[in-house]
Image 1 (spheres, each protein chain N blue to C red):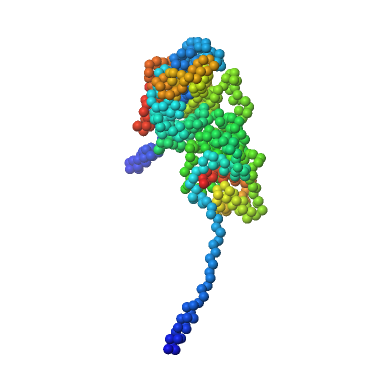
Image 2 (cartoon, one colour):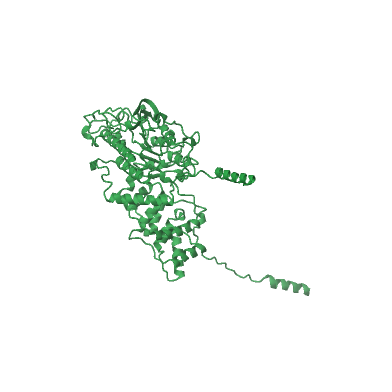
Length: 160
Length: 434
């Protein structure tokens, strides 16, 4: 009998242990477009209006969009016409392109990250970040306008 | 040399001869199998709907004195409504080639896009034609670029149109195995060389070669990261980087010329006489002078005012006649094109026999084009060097049709036998050539 009472006491002691509360936290993750997932070619109006917004920081007027669409249609080599349209945008006084803060590698990284997010709608991968930052560090004449033009005439910019 | 070694070397030499494609002096990798009649073809779609009655039948007098022989007076009731171009004092175009007075667009709707598509594909269109899409069958540009000289750059083929709309689709088809990769460089001068065109393109940032090198490096890096998904630019032909640069310079020069007033009166006529057909042809001439293309197609369209104003239609007919003659003279004055170019002029379709009830200020009734027999009656003129094209020859009986133009161009440029059987329905207009 004593043995039975002892055994029940032991079971009671260990089986009613209070469960420990565990809270699982989920870190915030930025969901951004990966280059590998871009398979939609921008339409003419999408390309023009997005390029305008990216350079001027404002929405293109419908009249301007109509004019540019007509100009765009009037030439068969769309790549050439896109380059010419962007060059024309970049020659306007009212462009809103941030300049590069060359204070440190970190500030250049910030510019590269921001530029990729703005133009490619994604963050650069480690290699891209290093490569572009390195280009900027090595070349004081490589300004933000040249970088914008390069990225905006790259194939990825034509897709979303 | 040992016999075995000699045979071995001979074998390698023979293998090399067989294995390495024949590289032509012009830089072409492959040659078309046929011989060429000329190295350049300019095809002018004398379009907008031209009725044979007013054109080659001269019912209102000779309204095409640059093309047609004869001094028939223009009808007195409409004469004051015509802003005449200078009179022709030289040799007519018909004397410099072969004129088919009774050419036909035999089938398909006699609409502008259908007529253009037929003339540029060599295949009659059906009633279900979609004017907002590329034609179903390969265009002459695609046939030329695919079967003639596959490595030939796009700047050798140009499509210059009077208007946008459906005509933008005619530089390439939706046909499998063809498409944008083989299309022509398309341009609509009226949109490019305009105030809006200048504002949108003419104030470009100019980069130094050093800056272009930086751009090229960074762009190349970006493109290398985006190779798997990239499937080209929809509805775009592609020029090489060098050709693209050349074209950009050409367009920028056109803006400079335009701002200097060089497009205001390029042919030294009364300034008010120019219509869009003449402006379009003038720009085609600039392309001819700059690029000396092997194949250029230009269309006119101002004759379409015949739907609402008959006298203006007649007015534009004599302007189109003048423009065609000017185009031919430019070709003959362009080194590299002179005496080595065949010019073909054909309306896309005619106009109806009966009017539509709309009368102009001179009491003349306008005419539409809605598939009646007369709207299928057109003419064709083929001009070329005297040893190649039969001179001063006229066919007054029915001969030839719209679908014959593409095979004829292919034959002139020596690649008609390279086009797969079954694509084309027409025949080479052999009567035009020696």
